[in-house]
Amino acid sequence: MKTFLFLIMLSLTFGSLYGQMDQKHRVIVLTDIEADPDDTQSLVRLLLYSNEIDIKGLIATTSCWHKTMVNPESIKKILLAYDKVQPNLIKHDANFPKSDILLSLIKQGRAENGMLGVGKNKDSEGSDWIIKELENSDDRPLWISIWGGANTLAQALYKIKETKTEKDIKRLIAKLRVYTISDQDDSGIWIRNNFPELFYIVSPGDDYGSATWNGINSYIPGIDNSRISNSWLSQNIQQGHGPLGAAYPDVAWGMEGDTPSFLSLVLNGLNNAEHPEWGGWGGRYELYKPDFSAQKKGGSGVPSEPETRIIWTNTTDTYTPYISNDYGRTVKMDTMTYNDNKVSLWRWRDDFQNDFAARMDWCVKSYEEANHHPVIVLSHPENITVKSGEGFGLDAFNTTDPDGDSFSFLWFNYPEAGTYNKLIKIEGAENAHGSYIIAPKVTREETAHFILKVTDKGNPQLTNYKRVIVTFKP
Image 1 (cartoon, helix red, strand yellow):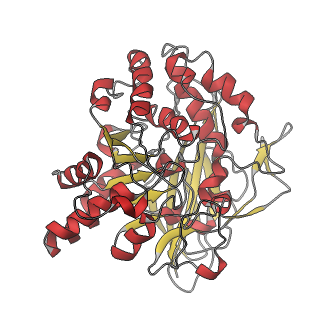
Image 2 (tube, helix red, strand yellow):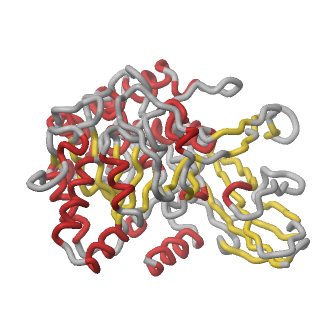
């Protein structure tokens, strides 16, 4: 594991291209597709990242909204639409897989709700597939992205516990990573209670409106929400973008509530899936045992129970957006500051919506007609050490754009991601290729995260990032 993470960091440090093959995260998706059109929406988006995310399974499951049926045929329908655009997608990246590979990954769980589908003789092709992939000789963690109920994973874990040695159980659990979109049956809390060492990201219970992932489609007063509007989706995703875009259904309850479960697997220089506390496209989470007494009850009927262990769960970001400025320096701080858990996700929303739109263009446009990501090249390592109170510089002078587009820089401190939680200002201009910062005076070793955001001026505008972690020594 340490070797794998080191190779990732080394590759990023020396300006590797966006999403190289040796950096791919592998993922199995559990989806209650047809319970809500948003699963289909999320699947369309996921397929447009299949060049960068190593999809290992697409398993149709139940949920509290879809208790007695599974719909693998609905997964197949979207993959057949992908098949029609894959020949054009490979003009932009040769790593988009053929549809027959993805079609072979469609599996299904039991058509039973929650723990009714877990126990002796409750195996399914979905639960067996999870075990099979987990036992493969692949050192990478296996991410389980749960869009509905978790009982197919629960059954896999039940069987592992019943049939494996303690040593093998520990080894296999250590390879698992779970990001579930809240609790949509009673098996999620069972998993967390029975496998206390399992890496598990969740906004627990069924108070879905307060969950971090809800930031993907929440209307936020005071900001531009246009990129989650139905008219934007119609113009940029659904219409004029080939069969895959046409297969993206209208919003019924909320746009793509399941998408955050895999957004942090996109290797864009910001995300680090092994560190949910660092924040990224999938939101930011911290490791603690949440207060059950403060948990609100939703209307799904999923039983609520106190957590018996620490989990990766909701935390708060304080965020003041940068906005465009027509005269003089091209950016300035907004007058509004936001503070809640959803902020950690929606703060990146314009970027990942533009990213989605650009990939939809790849379905129908030639390489020359479409936009592609700028390539950031730092002039220094991504991890540096400076002394308390000293000034230091960060720089990305050699950054390029594959389409020859102009691009803009923005440097900023992400206080919540480091141990030094006070905002550290960029001295002078934040929007030049180089930045100058004065280290705070510290009495103990502290870390601070500085994010470089580079956005091109193509259409749609595309963004890449670099995260520089600075250690301050007393």
